[in-house]
Structures are given as C-alpha cells and as structure tokens.
Image (cartoon, rainbow over all chains, first blue to last red; front, side, top):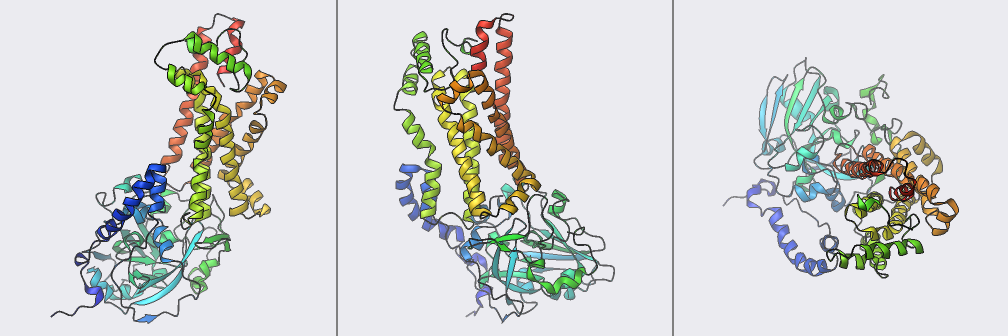
Amino acid sequence: MLTKKAWEIPSSEITPRWLYLNRRKFLAGALGVTAGALAGRTLKELAWPSQKVLAGTKLNVAAKSPFSTTEEVTSYDNVTHYNNFYEFGTDKADPAKNATRFQTSPWSVKVSGLVDKPRTYTVEELQQLAPLEERIYRHRCVEAWSIVVPWIGYSFNVLLKEVSPQPKAKFVAFESYYSPGQMPLGIRAGIQLPYIEGLRLDEAMHPLALLCFGMYGETLPNQDGAPVRMVLPWKYGFKSIKSLVKIKLVEKMPDTTWNLQSSVEYGFYSNVNPHVDHPRWSQAKERRLGEFFRRATLMFNGYDQVAPLYAGMDLRKNF
Amino acid sequence: MENLVAPTGTCPDIVGRSACAELKLSATTAQQPDGNGEHLRKVLSSKWIKLPVFALCLVPLGQLVWRAVQHHLTANPIEYITHQTGDWTLNFVVITLAVTPARKLLRLPELIRFRRMLGLFAFFYGFLHFSTWIGLDKFFDWTEMLHDVRKRPFITAGFTGFTLMIPLALTSTAGWIRRLGGKRWLALHRLIYVTAIAGVVHYYWLVKSDVRKPLFYGALVALLLALRVGFWLAARRGKPAGGPAQQHPITAETS
C-alpha cells in the first residue's frame, strides 16, 4: 500500500483534461449541432460556454501569507480564460483553448551561471524546497487590465540561496519552455521565442518575488504557465514568466522578450507605474476583470515595499 | 473594356435607388441576355433582395446582443464589444469598397444597389464602436478622451476615420446627390478611401505584436484601391483623345 499526498500523483495517472472536457463537449456538441443549423459557429460557441477547467491536482498549502491582499479574488473562470500566453495564440481566449494538451510532466528547471551550486531540479524537487504558501496578489497587465489571484508558491529567494550566487552575479535571466511541436502558434506570435525575461538580483531576492506552482488551491492550469512560473506583483504581467525551464545568474543585464520586440514601449524594469504611459495608451487606470468602471492604477501596483529597490533611479527613464 | 462603358443615355449611376439607375440596370440586363448570370442578376435586381441583405448586415449586432443576454461577452466585455464593433466597421468599409470592383469584374452592375446600405452599415458599426469607447470605455470622461485623441496616434487615426464617415452618411440620400451634383458628390465620397486607410492604420498601431489581422485588412484595402487605379488607367487608355462623351460615366464608375 502506497500512501501518496495529493500532489504526488503523477499527472500521467490523471485523466487528461482535454479528454475529460471532450466528454462534455460531445454532449454540448449534440445541442450545438442543432443550434448550428440556425447560425453556425456563433451558436456553437454559445453552446459551449467557457467552462471551469480544473487543474486537477490539489496543492497542500502550509500557510497563508502576510503579503496577501484582502481584495476580492477574481473568478477562476476569468483568470483561466482571459490571459496572454503567446506560445498558444495571441487572442486572450486562445491559451485556454490551445494549451489543453501541453505536456508539463516530466519537467525540470536548470539553474546555472554564476552560482556555486548549479543544478537541474525536477518540479517535484522544487516544490519541496520550502513550505508552499498561498499569496493573494494583484496582477496588472501592461494592457491595462488586472486580476487578483491566489497564487501558491514560495519566495524565489529560497531557490537562489540554495544555489549560492557568486559575488559577480548581478542579474537573473529566465527562459520559458518552447517547442514549436507543442506550440504551433508560436511562430505567429510576432515575438521572439523562447520567451526570455530578467530581473536584477536584488529584485529577484525580494520576498515578494514568488516562485509559483499553483493557484486557487491547485497546480497551475496549462494556460497559466504550468507547471512552474514566476509571479512579480509590482511589475507588469509580462515580467512574470510562465512555464519556466531555465534560470541563469549573469553579470550583465539580460535581454528580455518584449524589450527586444519594442524597446521604446517595454523597458527592462516594467514596474507598474501610473505616471509613465505606454507610448500608445495610458497606464493611469486599469480595468479589473469583473468590474465595470476602471480603477486607478497604483504605483508599483500598490506594493510600496519594493520602492527602496529603485531609490534614486529616474523611473521615467528606467521604465 | 465594355464593363467600363456605361450604357448610353444614362445619368451617373451613383445610387441604386434613384429612378435613373434602375432604368439603367434594366437597360443593361436587356443588353446582355446571356443565360449564365441571368438568374443571379434577376435576384440582385429584384425588389425584395435588399431586405435579407439588410437582415444579414444586422447579424453581428444580433450576435453581440445575444451574447450580452447570455453573459458571454468574455472576461472583459467592454473590450470584447469594442473589438467586435471595430472589426465589423472595417469589414463593412472593405465590403463597401469592394462593390465597385466586384460589379465591374463580375459584370454585375446590379451590385450598386447595395452600396449605400453597406456604406451606412459601416457607419453604423463605426458609430457603435465610437460610442462604446465614449460611453463604456471612457465613461464620458471628455478630458481624458481629448487627451487620447491628441496624444495616442492610434486613437487619432480611428477618430479621423470615423469622423470622415459622418459627412458621407449625411449626404447618402438621393436629395443630397442632386443638391451637390454627381461629380461633387463623388469627389466627397472618395473620403471613404481615407477612412479605409485610417481604419487599417488604427488597427495596426493598436496591436502589440501579432500584426497579421491588420496586415490582412491592409492588403485588402490596398488591393481594392489598386483596382480602382487599374480601372482608371484602363479607361484613360481606352478613351479616344479628349472624347467628352465617355468622361462622365467613367468618373461615376470609378467611385
């Protein structure tokens, strides 16, 4: 008799989500076909409302976090059906549709560069480095919409301390998984892939920076960056890299995907800042999903505790 | 070539509904009694055909209303409504621009009957798009909107494209064609070319990195404008030097 914790069940033993959903889709499809006689695709879409896609595996959360906001959490449905993950299509409804078959197990993350103890970790090993906390963070997209998500993970600095950065290390470079086979829409994304991101080492060491494995009590859904991602609540959403496979400590400021795409629009820091507009739209307000009126955007997305990291810097230049 | 030459003894066929255009249509139908497209042309020139076309043009709006009732306007309803009405504005601008090339290339002069309706639908969806921005997105925050129109190039372009459609919608009636005179009316209505280009630019400047859709619209508009240049060049070449007889109908047809 083996006793396993919920999160130890290999995902191979779980009915694949797409199969599970297809069963529903089949039933809905019977209705949809009838309706389709009237108006084709439109009604079929209506017959299949965005469904609650369960990530499946429960995560054991050891502690609530003092970093959590008390604001109302955005609905799971909105968070999982409206987001950007360009590897799976550029429409915000695309990732939920196209990431269903994304293989996220086995998964490993390679930590290398200017560290004393470089190592490749499996996700299971990473999950055991520290007790998992639930952290309810505000998440502000550069496109001026926002959500509140109960993420699960621990401070990224736990991992950094584990590998012992060398004194020369000044930045952390991140890289997402990319495979044109699994992500055939990636070539049409208009951005260079694999997706790369970066932080200054002191930013990465800040306790708010979260190494994230789950949300809403469960492992991350594929479209939200399974099986492991970063969450940096004081920065625009695109800084929080998804489906992480490589972490490298480096001396010089690393390239980042959106900065390569358009350096005048997306800076290396990309801290949430209502006073510095995106060249094409205002950043003063945001639309919280589920709310009708726009609300004011807060400096550092309301996470003032990161302000000392940028003391003395001109945030208009270092946007 | 013959499709460029308007039947003799007609006035510029600007609007399908005007009596003289109807006359002209029956004249052309009578001139080419070939069996192939005859049925289609009969349908296109029949009285009731405008009604189903009108209803079809309302489908995108109906879809939005239906989804609103069902609460299926995605996680960001205002953005969804904005994008849908924007898409359909551009779709109708492109369809309207396609009428003239289509009736020339397909030799279906009857298509002119739908142009005004299609153009007005472009304006209608443009109006919905614009109203969504004013009422739902900005919630009548005039200072912020004014700021956006001046500072955000993509909004400036969209604003320009929509504004230029207003005089076209206002002067779309037969009465206004008479008042302005065919030539001046046509000149005014060439503003739709500017609207089409502004619309594409508006879209192109808006997207973050995936420019496929704006480029697709751009290619369509470029093709439709290039066809007009082609018709114009062909008409010039075919025209006997300074022959005034054909000048008028050609101008009318180039719209």
